[in-house]
Amino acid sequence: MITDPASRVAEVLKTHEIDPDEVRSIIDGTFPVHFLRDIVSSQLDADRMDYLLRDALMTGVEYGRYDAEWIIHALCLGLDPIQPQNSTDPNHLRLCLDRSRGSMPPNN
Image (cartoon, rainbow, N blue to C red; front, side):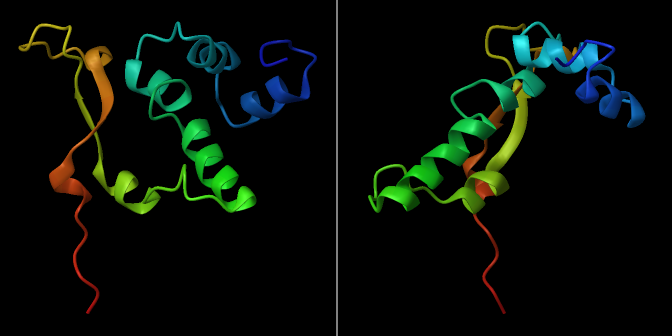
C-alpha cells in the first residue's frame, strides 16, 4: 500500500516529497538510520507509548500510566553501544533517554 504507485498513500507521500520506499524501509526495519526505526519499533516506540496510556485511561487502571512529558523531554540520540565509541556515522545513533534532560524547569 505504501509503495504501490496506484495507492493513495503513495500519492500523498510523493505530494509531500517523501519517498514511499524510505517509509516502507523504516517500517520493515531495513532503513539505515537506526533512530528513525526506533521511533517505529523499539522498547520506546510511539505506538507502544500511545497504547499504554490509552489502555490505562480506557480501563481505569494505573498499570501503563507514565509521565509522557518527562519522556519526551528526556529523549535524545546516543551512540549505539555495539558500535565503535569513536564512530561519527549518523546511522549508528539510537533513540535513548537522558535522565538529566527529563527534568523540567518549574513553572513561574
